[in-house]
Length: 325
Image (cartoon, rainbow, N blue to C red; front, side):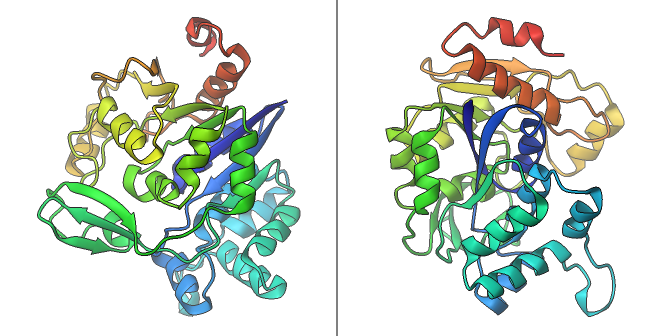
C-alpha cells in the first residue's frame, strides 16, 4: 500500500487530506506548530499547549466518524465569552490536559474521530516563527507575518524560528518510511516552511527514498509571495528543504470569471504563472480549479494527481494528465 506523508498546515493540507482519504493508502499528516493567532494562539498561551487549530482541521479531513462528530470538532462559537473559539480546539486542549501530553491528546482525538491515517506535529516544542524583511526589520509571530501589520510591500528575506527545535520522532520515522512526500498547498512562509525549519526535518527529507512532490499555490498572497511565479515558490522550498522536488504540480486553469478575479485583485492576489523551474524537477500542470466561487484546489483532482503519481512511478506522467477530469 502506498505510504504518503503530507507536510503543511492551514486549509491547503485539509484540502489534500480530504481527497486522499478516499483511496487505499497509508496517510500521515505532519502539521506545522507555528500557529500563534486566534483561538489557537490564546489556548497555546494560556495552557502551554501545542497550537491545536491545524491539527483539528486535519482530524476533520481524515475522519470517518459521524457527521455530528465532525460538526462538533468544527463548531465555532459566535457570541459570549467563547466567541471565535473552536469547540474542537477546546476538546484537543482538554484531551491534552487529561493525557498530560500533546501527542497522546491528539491520538485520543484520532480515536474519537475514527480517522483514516495519522496526524503528527512536526515538533513537540513550543516555537515562534520570525521573518526578516528586506529592510532588515524582524517580524515576530506567525500571525503577524500571515496578516501583516508592517508594510506588506516589503519582501520577506528569510524566515527562522526563535530557537532551535527538534523534529518529533514519529514524524521522522514516517518521512523515512514514505513512498511519497508532499509539501503544499499552503501559505509558503507561514504554513509550509515552518515545518522545514525544525532541526532534523530537511535532513530527514533528504535521507528519505520517497519521491518529493511540491504542490504550488494557485494564487499569490499579498505581503508574502507578491509577484511570485512557480519557479520562485520552488526555489524557496528547495532552499529550506535542502532538496529539489522530484515533481512540481501547478495550476493551468483558465479563470474567466471577471467578478471573481476582481475580488482577488482587490486583495492583490493573482494567478501563479509558470516560469523556469530546475530541470531536475518534473513540472506538471493540472486544471485544479473546479469550484468557480473560490480559487482553491479541488480535493478530488488534487488527490487523484498524487495517487496516480504514486501508481506510475517512475513511469511517464503523461498518462496521469490524460486520466484526470
